Structures are given as C-alpha cells and as structure tokens.
Image (cartoon, rainbow, N blue to C red; front, top):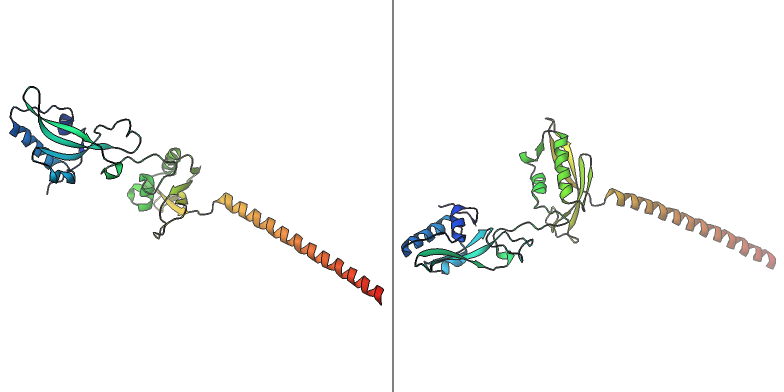
Length: 250
C-alpha cells in the first residue's frame, strides 16, 4: 500500500504545479503527470466524483490570503485539472477552493491566553516518556521558563516549579468541567539516577486563596465569639433586670 502524504508547496512536484510550470505537447503526458500526483499525495474524497482530467486535494501553504491569516489556516483545497495554454500546449492548473477551517486536515494552533493539554510541552509531561527527562535542574527550569514566556498571563514561575491555568473540557475521569479551566502545578523532580523530570499535579485551590479562606474563617470565628459574648452579656443584664423587678413586687 502506498504511503501517501498531504501535498505541500515546498515539494518540487507541487511547486511546479502551483506555479504553472508543467507544459506538455500532448494531452496524455499531462494526464500521466496528473495520475502521478493522484498516487503520490492524499486526495480529497470529492476526487472520487471527478473525471480523469481532474482531482481535488489539500495543499499546505497554498494561497493562504489575508482573510485567512491568523485564523488557523495552514493551506487550502485545490482543484487540479488539465488545461490548454494560449500557445496550444497542455498544462496542469490549480484553482483554490474555499472551505471552512473545520474541513481542513491540518490547522495551525491558534494563539490563546490559556494552553490546553494538546500543547506539545504539556503532552510530553502527561505521557512521561523519555522526552520528559532533563540532565540538570537548569535544563528543566529552562523549559518551564520558555513555557511561562509563551503564556505569561496564566503562569507564575517559581524555582523548579510553575503554577499554570490550563484550558480543558474534561477532567482526568472524563467528566465535563464546568468552567473549562484547571489549575495545575508543574514540578521539576529529581530521579534516583540524578536526572530530572517534570510532573504535574492539580491545584484546585491556589495558595493565595487558601490564605484568604483561612483569614476569612478566623474572622468568622471571631465574629461568632463576639456575638456569643454579646448574647451572654445581654442575657445576664436581662436576668438582673427581671430579678430586680421581682424583688420590688414582693
């Protein structure tokens, strides 16, 4: 089975195609080249409905215009067909087909304030394979710093540690997360062999919030004690008052 890949404008065969450089004296030579492309690259399913003189495929880097720039587009679909030049020669022409990004096989990861678990750095940590090992603590710290630099609004770097807010749709058990974010801490941990690896753990209640909660609990306890003291004092005064009135009536 032929291992087909997605076309890219960097490939010599595709570069010649999009630049209109294929020229043939007879139509069969152009059709032969079209079939080479058909067998070499991944075709769109719509190609099945095309004639022998045409095909449809997605090309990385093909005619990404200003309206698509920065919106995740990595390339575009193209209608490839055999056509005739003004000189009477045969060529292959590529015409852009506009399709929504959701139908594209490859997409750019859009910039966001929050990383998600699909980010290569977080994916490596979660997999915990050989690519998550570092020779020194400095090497691990450098990776943490690079990640913090990429997402400065949702990270707090510490020595050998990084606090981070991650966008996620589900938790570890697959349950939907209501607010779509998770607070995690990434630590550089030394292994018995002296190397370091990055591990993460969930920090649903940040340290600052824990301190605020503790202060609030102490304040509430103080207020309750004051209320209790006031009630006891009032009860005592009422007792004295009622006792005095009883003595006067005897």
